[in-house]
Length: 570
Ligand SMILES: Cc1cc2nc3c(=O)[nH]c(=O)nc-3n(C[C@H](O)[C@H](O)[C@H](O)COP(=O)(O)OP(=O)(O)OC[C@H]3O[C@@H](n4cnc5c(N)ncnc54)[C@H](O)[C@@H]3O)c2cc1C
Ligand SMILES: Cc1ncc(C[n+]2csc(CCOP(=O)(O)OP(=O)(O)O)c2C)c(N)n1
Ligand SMILES: [Mg+2]
Image (cartoon, rainbow, N blue to C red; front, side, top):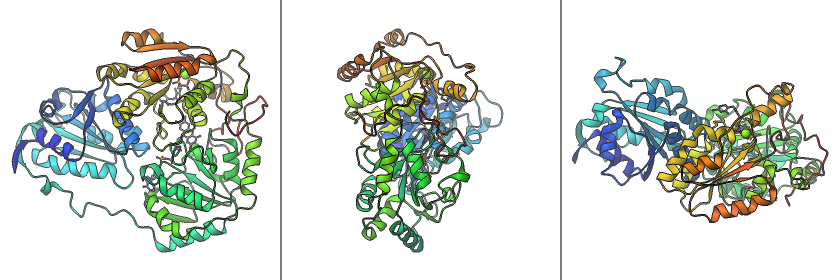
């Protein structure tokens, strides 16, 4: 058994947990840990703001399924992490955040850079720890990784006092294993509910799957595809579920909800059975709960018992890992006789006007939809696209057709502007061979664009597409629809992004015409380093369709121009 400092034990444990990369920013209370880090095979990415570190850890986790790690000092370093931790919590992303804390004797004395970060993050972490002794470090780190990745994943914070980092003790990895009392077994689906669900599935004539993020979190996409291929049930996806079934699969209908496809929302209202898999009936998904899917029986599979009957009462709730359930169901599944249900959905597609913008003649205007469509084409639908929050995020979901799981990374639950650039850095670190694009608004980019320096210092290639509409576009859209076009605080002045990127030593171009989009994307992909593309798009375009917040799901605001609809993109 070796005698190590708390700081050495911390990194030793991380290496044993399989960590290779971490994102952080140093300061006084975490200095002993930073000093000890030099001895361990860990790649530390120096961020420009601790919020960036948490989003990088989050993007790393979402792209790879591994736990992402972020490090900060006490006080302002720790509080800067709060937004990123809440973002990870809302979207069930497994990250471990490590913060330095003032010496244990100083706690409670308003010491320099003291803040009660475990208190502050209590409601936004799955669990958190204050470690005051070196001999606690190993067991806490091992438990923290287990908590972050097991069951419903989520963020965990470990706050370690400076003296716990500095003092020494015997380090025994095996003795620090989480106790068997602590390890909660994955819930097992009850036989009765499995049987009831199968009966409902067999009896259904107008069934729909509501496919969510849990399918990716539970690595269940192969089993899910087998379920769909066997039964023939059409699939609607949540924003975070995009990628769980290839967009090109004939039974994949697209996104549901506030900015989902019109035919999907109408089909939900007409369905006689909803099979919800690893999704949590967010209000962006359901609209008015009183009128939501009234004709449908409902099956809900979720690993978190708190989600069953939380927003939508269901007929059969199954608390289990969705992959286990799909595997148990598989032998009993049969191809369903759905009569004209798929024909009905095709008819609904026919009168929808979501994708009509592709058919517009090129009248000299550059629409965001054009940019996303051409980005999809030029990257063969295989890029990892990390979006920010706003209109561009919704256009990405509508016009980029993801064929692979974990290739759309976006802040859904918290809707955190500033997420994209740092999360894209994390995704690139996790998947160095992937073609990674950050699709950002002119507003959100300005919240974390300092991370361009991180990209350069780390010599990373993360391409950036700014959808520059001169507005906080999504808020402007709400003002247009619901506040009689009073654009309070939404017109947005931006710097010259090309010059700004240039100041960081990053190649950058502005694009204003549609015919220049594809060549710009291709050139960016071929370039050896990061390229920032400033797409100056139509300023007052809106995302359609739109279910106003709290409205009935089938009462969508549609694009006013009556254009011929195309289900498939040209
Ligand atoms: C501007 C904006 C607009 C939006 N508009 C839309 C919209 O139009 N449509 C839309 O869908 N979303 C929209 N969203 C996103 C929305 O707010 C939610 O984030 C999203 O609907 C959540 O998707 P989810 O339930 O699949 O994922 P999560 O919120 O991540 O939930 C995943 C669920 O899976 C469960 N789970 C995890 N692991 C497993 C496992 N192994 N087995 C079983 N269950 C598991 C979890 O317990 C959880 O209940 C919008 C967001 C923004 C910011
Ligand atoms: C941190 C944060 N602040 C405010 C908001 C509210 N909000 C949601 S979308 C949006 C506008 C985003 O503007 P921009 O980044 O330019 O994207 P666009 O909608 O124009 O595509 C705002 C302000 C938010 N989601 N996150
Ligand atoms: Mg904008």
